[in-house]
Length: 351
Image (cartoon, rainbow, N blue to C red; front, top):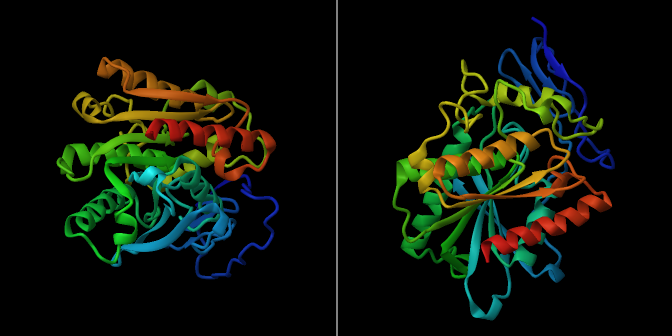
């Protein structure tokens, strides 16, 4: 059987201390590979080289943010990293962002240094509490596992609020639970959107929690037909997302036997748009990157939701001159400038 393989992706070219991959002679048949990120063997064995450093929850004192890790579900090893500003603005309680990291549903962690630094900065500047969810990864746990973990996290928070947990009082007491947002980048954006749909359609009343909005940063959606930007946007050698890698992620993450027009991948396809669900979700902010292969698909997503809902439920912002996941994976000057603008957009949306 021929293995599927794509070209090498390196998130941080300055990070050379890569974890050495052990040799497993018994794992001979390689089914899928995104070079440098993930290998999946026929017997189910999965290898993920540590291409991005994992870090503890420590933060510089001058940032004014406290970080701590909490366990959501020991049985499935779901945990989350909290970012809590130390000082309340004029004594007011803060909005809360439930954040889902990217990585094609298959790689990534809340402990990756790129997310740790970005979310700490976001919490400090936007003056909000952030919970970054470390959900289960595919292909060991295909969708809807990540969505289920997101729903479970919301229910876990709700239970903590209702019982008045003493252990978690230090951060619970700082949150305005009538102002909670689901947020994510790339695959995490997909998770945030689908968790919102599941909460509305299956869970219903979340009181005292009110889901006030959804923020999607270059959300990872797909489809069997290709958009213009997917076909013709030229990606640099170190691009975090190419069409080939996107297809591989979908093969590994979607339920066995379905294609990319499945609603979890293509929310605006024939099976994806549920008018009742769309009308019941709160406002959505979509942040799109001009040089991202997902650009046109993100634009179609915004236009379709606004059209079927007969109102503007989605607003979007286009970030010029940057590609996919620029806010966490690029160190260029233009990316840093756009990241500052992105944080200001989020701050304005949740204010």
